[in-house]
Image (cartoon, rainbow, N blue to C red; front, side):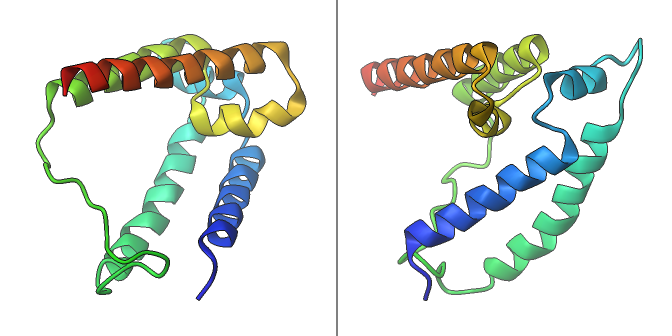
Length: 140
């Protein structure tokens, strides 16, 4: 059985490599996909389609097991119905993604470039995580 840290590291490196190879660390690529009335770039749709094609059978196969390899149990969502928090979070994520052309995975991968705009985005993202946690703690 592989150590959790090693598994997480390999998974993160694989995802980062996939983001770089597919060009998804480029905000221009993402914004090109969202520009449906101008110079539309379908690359993101193809990357997502490839990810879904791999993930669906892999998830089905993994969930046939009694437990994950590196944990005592699966941690699946308790509810399958969208709630106010999910809808608000998805809307905020989509707005930010549409404005910046980048989301958390590519932002983390792009930190290695040292770009000032990526660092600013990453710090704003961390502030958003902290704010969500603070607001969530007050409501529970």
